[in-house]
Amino acid sequence: MLRRTPVTVALGASAMWALALATPGWATESANATTDAAAEPPTADALSTPVAAPQPSSGRWFDLNRLPFIPVPEIDVSPNAGLTVGLIPVVLKTNEQNEINQILAPDIIHSQYFGWGANYRLLGYPSPDNQWALFGGLKERVERDFDARYADDLTRNGPYTWSAETLYDRSGVPRFYGLGNDSRKSNETNYVNSQGRFELNFGLNFSHSLQLAYNARFRIVDVLPGVLSGLPSTGALFPNLEGLGTNRDVEHRVMVSYDTRDSLTIPREGGRLVVYGGISNEIGGSSADYTDFGADARHYWPLDPHTTVAWHTAVRYMSASRDTPFWALSSLGGDRSEVDEREPLRAYPEDRFIDHNLFSTSIELRHRVLDLDAFGTHLDIEVDPFLDTGKVFSNFGDSPISHLHTGGGIGFRGIARPFVVGYVDVGYGREGSSIFSGIDYPF
Image (cartoon, rainbow, N blue to C red; front, side, top):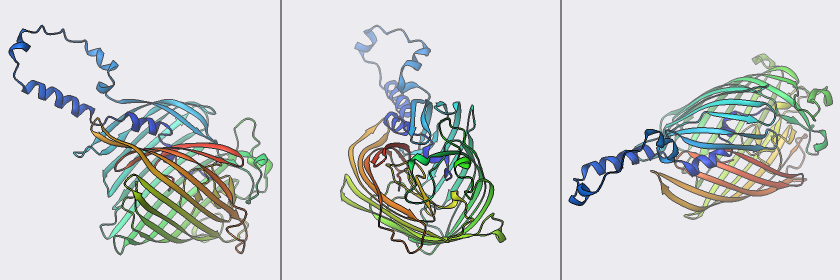
């Protein structure tokens, strides 16, 4: 399966550190303190008190409140990507309400598998309606990526909403275990996924809640032999698997959504229902013919000002075409819900179970244990126990709720409203435990 985008793990576990250390108001606060002090006339006692000699300017580098950036240690762990460590000098900008509206987060890292590397990340949140992001990175071996995206009128206050994304991603960590709900962990293989993609979304807003949207996705996917030692290459163990080598995918989708959530990023009440259908065929330029349809639902119930129950469920069905690439099939596993693509099972690695059809459901108890105003911004800390369950299956008539895979665990979230959520999720299941980190809620 394909990694959807590097954005979801852009800051890794360091997102939690960044939120804990975030001081977007430090420059303003320091300047205001200096101005206020200068405005006060000196007293007689002050005039008679010896004045301390000024400190050398180099002293600012030993005072975290005076650094031109926030030095954030980067510790990113995932079942597939292994351990990545590094340092992110984070620069945050805020608006007049002390809300973060821009994040600059380049880094220097060392990957367990691919050596030294560097990334550039710039995220903008000009308003609740508009968001944009620019990412780029490379490592000594194999991996590199570029991603640019823009979205307008996200809150549906205008007549239409649109977004566009262009991406190039070359990843050496994807795994394939075989098709089906009973695929064995002992059949774990590795491949290099290299893809270029352009995606365009246009939504017609009938109201603030109801939208009809069209999505077009064009991608070229190259599945190459694996590079991780100790794991066989996917093509060696599954030589007849559809989707190896170079393939084209041109998919057109229609989506109807009804959304009453009080926030796109940090919802506390309301819900969203999406019903969709898509088609990819050789007439339109694809390497294979397939159709899919499904639904995605999520709802949020506030129990009290500090606690919210979050629930999510999804079903996806695909035509039983034998030439459908494996990376276009339904996927269960990992930490993200992506409509019409993959669903979370946080006790298992990304894309652990793959087949044509899918059922998934998750529930979380999002409980805020600490909130504080620090250095000009508001910070919430959550502890969120969760339970995920689901399955994949090949036949349309199979039961979607029998022989489910289940995993539970606990999540830790740092939230800087209104746009930033950093998380670390630890899941436990039949095959062991998994740790995921990144930005945004899983659903």
